[in-house]
Amino acid sequence: MGTQLDEYLEAEIQSLLADGRIAELGITVLRRENLLVLGGEVETPQRRDEICRQITERFPDVEIACDIGIIRAQAPSEVEEIS
Image 1 (cartoon, rainbow, N blue to C red):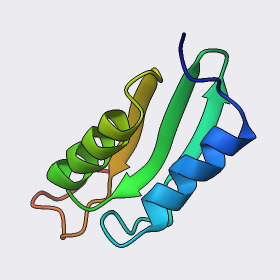
Image 2: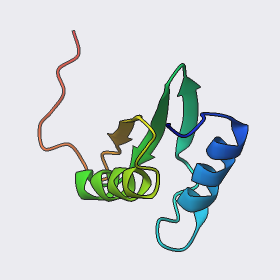
Image 3: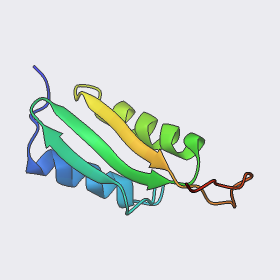
């Protein structure tokens, strides 16, 4: 039997996201039927992968979609053409 997706599970995941190991307050958790979607933005792909790994590891019975984007923290390397 899988873990029930409810507001308690969402709160538990938000708590894990905010604790010292992850410490990401800008990550959102949305319920979509039998799926939890992690959203927001972080600075590197490695950070995103680590967050998703830790959440998936902590909640192995929950289907999780990692939809966390990457913030471009440096100046662009090319000039953007605007037409």
